[in-house]
Length: 188
Image (cartoon, helix red, strand yellow):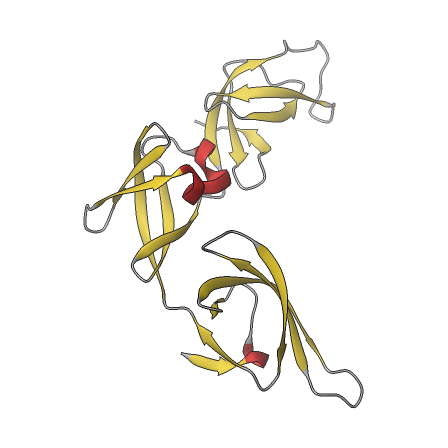
């Protein structure tokens, strides 16, 4: 589907030089007596690289034909991660490179959304929060409050996050996987 460059919006996926690219930021700009343009920051979904491009208002942009499928993580074998499509039960393998920064957050049974372009998965979306148990951290300091400073804690998946001083080993916590930040103690 083709459209004018002035209709670019944040989050949109378009085809740029043959690759699917997500619009991270955009700014419509009309300088004085010159023609309008759109300055866009794009992320190439195939390579993962970010770049900027200036589109003229008259440019025609092609929107990428994307599909989204829910996948369930089953297990990891070496550097290959095995998923099952929840809709048709097909099994799929993705490597470390395809998962990128999301790889350490995989745990059996985790449901993710995978974006497909031309029948191939090119990116995944993790849930906004995941629950993990703290396996290693410094002991609780007497008198620590919620507003006290933070300390490093190692989660069961091997990722280290900063947690408040009052959180102890064995506590289950909610973490934002996209930023790696502690959210709160899990309520389960």
